[in-house]
Image (cartoon, rainbow, N blue to C red):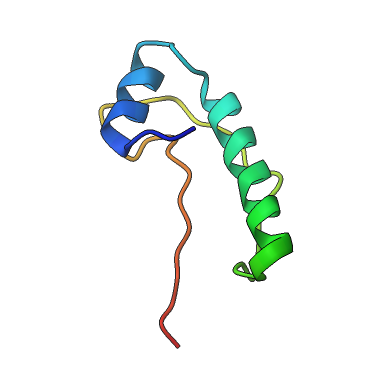
Length: 68
């Protein structure tokens, strides 16, 4: 899915996509990237969605990168 955070949040709030669908797609993308780049220490395959709230990051998958 090639959308920004605000657009994804609006899609989640309006039931255009489900949180589980977004999480599954993101995890699959991480595994594809991992095979080529070894970019992740941990990919949390068993993550579950929570209720979508007004918080923009609610149910938005993300990765954290250190600079070391």
